[in-house]
Image 1 (cartoon, rainbow over the protein chains, first blue to last red):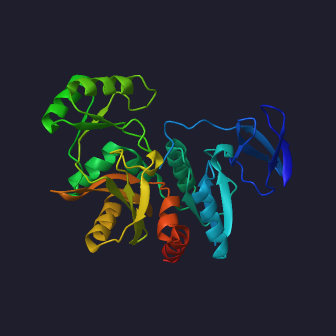
Image 2: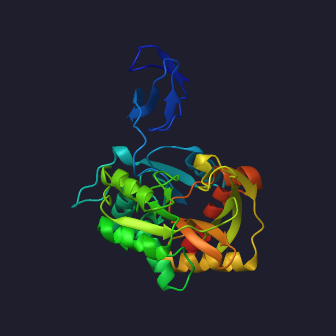
Image 3: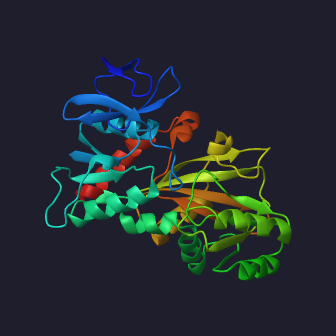
Length: 56
Length: 282
């Protein structure tokens, strides 16, 4: 597990070590976050909104 | 075997495919589309024998399938299949012209023409965005007044096809439809999607999944649809019309299958991987 910072509230967010980039994480502050991977380093950004072209 | 998974949002399905591919002894190479850059004079540095397309965004799915195919790596589904399946007008007309039953549908480029087509089809009619999913913005118009309003809503969206009207007869189906999966040369599993409270029977809108026993007619129909639309892994939505029998509503090129696995116990990911390996070896 790795502890990251929520980009909205600054609080701690725990993420699995093997999280995939793009994986969604709900934070207790209400933010929906997306895992970002640069090399081996994980971070979080605000998740992309559901797009008009999303779906099956 | 090195199996690439092109994705943008790792849902249950993508994680399940990754896990099942690993269980089958394959090396999985996740390809996060949003961080990819493709240059016209070189190939992306990714070693995969074949790819499975799993982008939730249609535009990213079509584009990444095209770009991956362009460097000679097979991908399911291929970009032509995705274009045919994600555009409802293409799907309907391709199938209808091949004598596969679909709801009677009119496509027109102007509102008065669309209203005229609705009169010909007979109210109530269904108006759908030409590209879209999860039942979003699909509406039943009881009369010309309501159809006019729905067309106005469509006109003021940012959808690419907002000025093209796709109007369809309303099929009086039971409170359910059928989702059947075509995988390789088989159609091994399907579900009913039941919703007594909403004529739109998408599970995204609350329909309940129930197991389906696939009869020979349904299986043959699914494979015929796959033959016309192409691809390797399709989710085919079927209506049961009292007079016409099975009618193809839509075809999904990057189908979701979480609820199918949950209610049938059928391992869709494992079956897909097995069929893909058979196909690749040929």
